[in-house]
Image (cartoon, rainbow, N blue to C red; front, side, top):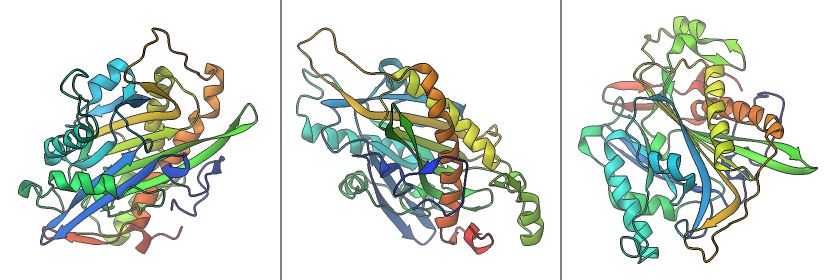
Length: 339
């Protein structure tokens, strides 16, 4: 659950996970075999029907070398109407089909009088440690991940993070949360990351440049930053879609603090949603009322995103177990660094 490191200034949430936002749950399916290290991770913004009760959302592409799906409708409408699925690059189509089937089972009017549904699927390339060409992800794995979502969940080399690498070490799923007060009440920002990026010589831990030292001591070969990272940001603060996009943009600052420079071949994408209010798919009213934060007060949330992203990346590496695949070994950072 997060790390024991003191990252930043803000108070951590109870679990130090994205699920510190009430209603948010996460589930994994981990698939391992001979040269197979892959999986699926599902994030539910709430436990109800996402199609009939949408959440406000936003996306921001930091560097666009990626194959995710569903981004343009979120960009246009500012709503998220399905759970969020993470998987490997070549399984986006399968995951999207599985998610669409899942949504149609609960919503028989999808594809009919209610139109279609926008599946939100994000990816990183786990081909370094896994037989990505084998297409080992199936639609049933999406169902299973969605069925497994809970408030308490594993981090590290699990789910979509099973075969991912980060700064020359084992990467994967990481999470963290931060708390602030607005009008005297506590609100939380939670982050979940899928990490598959970074070049070891640029690695920074809590502000200290440690990458070059680790590279020399461990004789780890320098590799270009050509992976990817997906950042999922959740909050219970009442933000509109424009303000959520502003949160997404701050994810880049958190990534920079651990040493990312968003390499040419890296797909770095942030998605954010607020659970504070839901929008109905159908409404008899023309005018809907929505709350929004006073823009000056966004300064209370921006540092939370940066700190949570920074810690979530490190958490993904510190929780990941050393993994072998396709003749490569990616060591866990926890074997070399004390929290």
